[in-house]
Image (tube, rainbow, N blue to C red):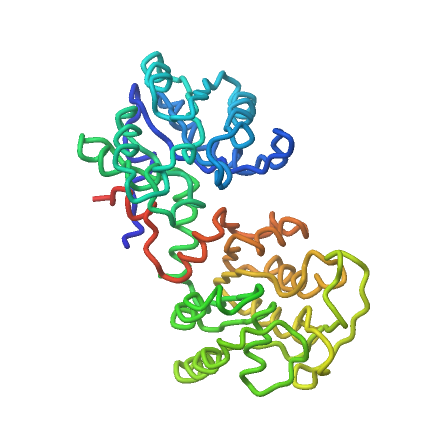
Length: 408
């Protein structure tokens, strides 16, 4: 997959109708947006097109929409917040059909510098199916050019992400990426494909099964692979250690052995926890006060559960991170939602904050962790995609990236 994509800086949008696929999948509580990060992240691309004199048509999904269209997942609150952020009226097309007569009329009435927001794309069931050709064509009929700025959805071959591009391109339009997508490609894509070395990858989170292909791919690309979080205990069990009642993917023990053998064969360092913070049980609620003990990883009690990396491991991992020129981190080191069990994640975040390396946080829980723990402004890049970030790290082709025009 080429990573050299046409961007909004590579074509003239003056007077053109430009459809922009954004990621406005914001959290809502009683119809009120509780975190506007994704709206703010879309503003640079929108403002660039408006300054060029384009007619900007925005679309996005919101939520899972499992039970059909409903006002609880309407983009109406997003239109209101966007109007405030842009300092101009955003015309919202409330039609559940998304691209019906109301949308056509709203777009026909647009003047350069106007903004229209379409209804939640997932209100059209065909958005997520293989039979989205009609929806793709209807979206394309509304515009002259298309810009994808929704990295968080770029791993989905949906009508509004990939399908629309074939129709726009067939009629001579541009299919480009926005500033947010470009940043993801520059950092995440190039970190994996062309890293400045030493390249250190840090993987955490609960299950080995969630990151099988990521582990395999990164072992070939990185110089050092660091394993933490719940997945570390499956590796420790694969080494023959007692892991007590810690989380374990028993079906993946042989896989972990293969990965340790692969690291040795490739001459790569694979670091596992040398000591572990344990508790008698999982905290309930998750942030409840809890008593902990620390044991070397080869001496865990049979009746205790590993919850975080210990102080010796924190120092080991921090030292490895500080020697790097490029660091990619996906997944926390422990139960970071609990103050007592967040110390390992904080130590890794602090090490990344203190280094001069390019530091890339691969979305999902690790992004939540650095945001919650106050390290966000110290990182080079925090990915906006969870599943999309993982698939990029796996080396997969992302439909939303592949569908954009290559720079000639």
